[in-house]
Length: 100
Image 1 (cartoon, one colour):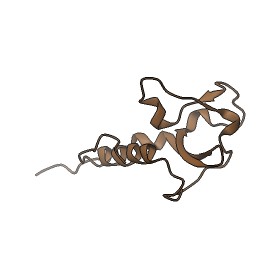
Image 2 (spheres, rainbow, N blue to C red; image 1 turned 90 degrees about the vertical axis):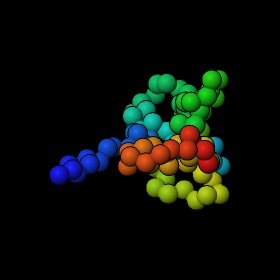
Image 3 (spheres, helix red, strand yellow; image 1 turned 120 degrees about the vertical axis):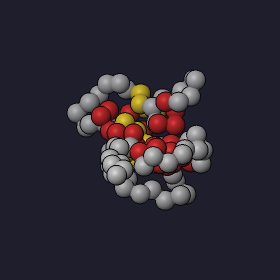
């Protein structure tokens, strides 16, 4: 009899949506967003972590409040693609390579 498949934790669990420069929502590493942390001064959005020459975002330009579900109008398409891929991988499904 086949064993039930155990659910995996998505890699996305370590990230949360925050507003950058009051214009676009990106996923940032939750561990680096604690309000009492001041280092590093530049943070990378998830979409930048996978680039060869990533662009850091100044900590002071990243919103203090978590955004539970940003609208499509402000959500970074690359971060959204990475989120979908991570959740699909955790469910044991195929991934699309971080595509929006």
